[in-house]
Image (cartoon, rainbow, N blue to C red; front, side, top):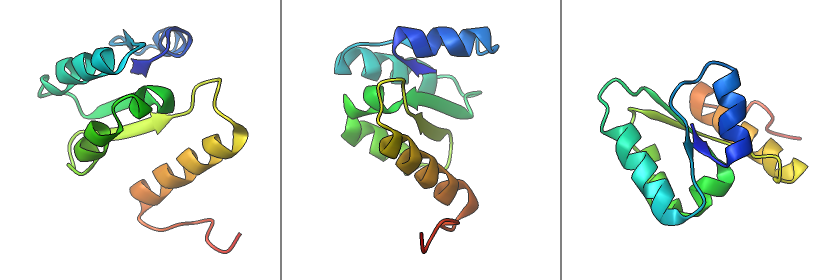
Length: 102
């Protein structure tokens, strides 16, 4: 889990052990380096705010089938942004846009 302090703490309370609080693009890149250097990493969760700080790199990582990279909204994200992120995630996992035609 890579993101703001509030989100990382929430994931720790839910049992996610490896969490990195980041504020700058450089911190996001360092956290991604650490996570991706572990061959057992199968899932990388990061907030959309953290991903925006290093968007090009995040998009390159997403092109790889392993690990799976999931962006989640933080509390500051607008409702529409949260819905768009969820829709993109479902489309990536399922392979189709289940809400097409809305």
